[in-house]
Image (cartoon, rainbow, N blue to C red; front, side, top):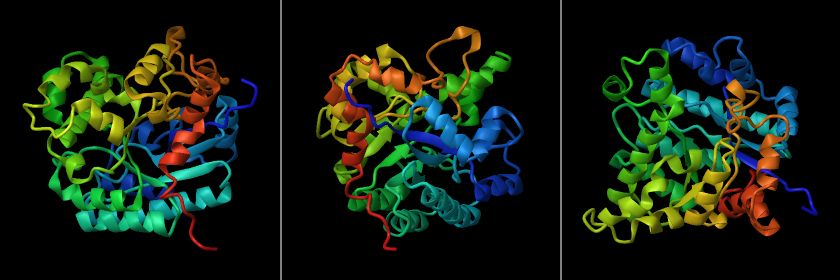
Length: 345
């Protein structure tokens, strides 16, 4: 390319002190993905300063849109979630303010309380200048299509604030039925190997078939991990659209209400398929840092964004320079144009 791409990564994960302390109080699993321990993942999650900037430079990422590690505050008790979400968003805003040229942030949302969830999104966008929020699918036993979320979805639609969804571990009966009896690999399959993506992908379908996007036709959702599996089955699942009472073809909901990013899985095949299904004007970019940074077990090439791989993957893509710029930053800027207003000084 003649000009250097400006790349904005929209799924770049952090654990801020308010959340880390809340996890300790709640007795949450003390795993690296929640910032516990001294592994590279845990340490990188807790760091949002010079080291993270250096890693972004190594990846070739210009701007990181920060968000909490899954499941955010969504598995905390309701009263704690409301307080911690506010504190976490204030801390995220401080990080952004320290380097506004390099950082943006998705708001944490206490989905346990419909009123508090909507109010915190309003505050995060209107007062803190956040462009949108990160959600984590299920809250307790309430899935993403539960009517309790309508107030939040209505607020997001009104503000023009996209909601990026991230998976979390399936409920225990699903884990027991499909992933038990396999030893250590069972937990991986239930989580980041495959189980996460089926769990959230089915929730996307539930949102569509339950009428969420008919009630809120301008609501915009960002799907990571190349669309959470279901996008690859639209040609088949769409056959059942009429039986499900959809007002539009199933694929139309994805092309009008969804944006898709790859979450650091640098697969040229997934990239081409997503472009064919969604069009490059509905694609965003993300690295899923730090979970894809510096790991290449057995030489496996597709889930490592370090040493410039995040940048070269997009620069080498089989698209025009204009399409690459759309994916790299222009689609994000277009998507967040309404919500991306900064509070007065």
